[in-house]
Length: 423
Image 1 (cartoon, one colour):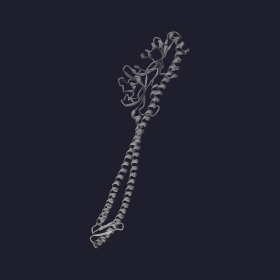
Image 2: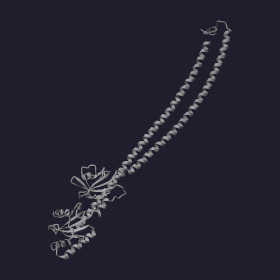
Image 3: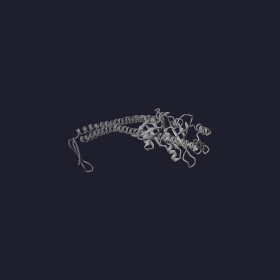
Image 4: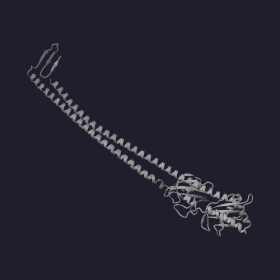
């Protein structure tokens, strides 16, 4: 009987140990569950932050490309417009010269007067016609020269001869019997810059008997045309350049440097200058530094039928000014999105922790109740078996040392005070 009680006590101890082990496993699983959820939120937040940052970066690069394309389009549009305007201006001047060369009622009077310069009546007619043309077309001056290049009439009235640099083109006009449009030239005697149209005068198949020179002041129309920028800008400008030997010459006045027309020269070895790139035959969008040493974006064009090249440029800082503003906007938006997502995940994590501890508390409370109930059952069982053990012990004490019984199914039951055996 005592062995039976020992077995029961062992069972009770196992139940106690099982309850303790279950509680330990529950306590171990709860922190693991909380840590797993916290790490999950952290990984999701990191992934979301990387996604927001990558989206902001790609948006910035897209904006940079679009703004660069917009700057390129603007510079290209301005350059193309300037080229068309310069070509149209040149065509208008050539048309004026063509009118004079084909003026059948005027050229014979000139021929007659050059052969008979003493005829004052013819001279007055020629001078009057040239004066009307000069005032109507707004040329700086008009010269009439004979076949030897001697100036016979100059308007407005002045004792001035055709400059030597223009006379160099007389032979070409006489040989080709075509109008010659001279390049920019600096007149040392007057310290002025001019262009000129040389018109050969001839009757039918005869050799030219004289020349009319239309002198053009570039400050009057051409330079303002080149320098005017169609949109508000602090640094944008258009340059007109040509090559002379191993140098490039700036033909117009510059926005950021005065008195530079035909005086500012830069070696052609300066490969980082857009103007040098232009005279070497490059066209389209380029990056480099200008005559000030400032980084610029530029579009290069060739002027048809002229040894001129046009550079339309703008400082990189001005071109990127809008992009810098967009950069700050993107950075602020990305920072706000990351901050908002962090705050959202923080609130979600806090809510999750509250729910976790709430479940933990409910589980602990339920486990405590179950433990108290189990302990109460164990206590009652222990009391019950303790009473039975005491009663049985009393019964054994009053029994003989050895008892043998034969059960109805012929099994022999033998017992003593210490044990019982069934055969």
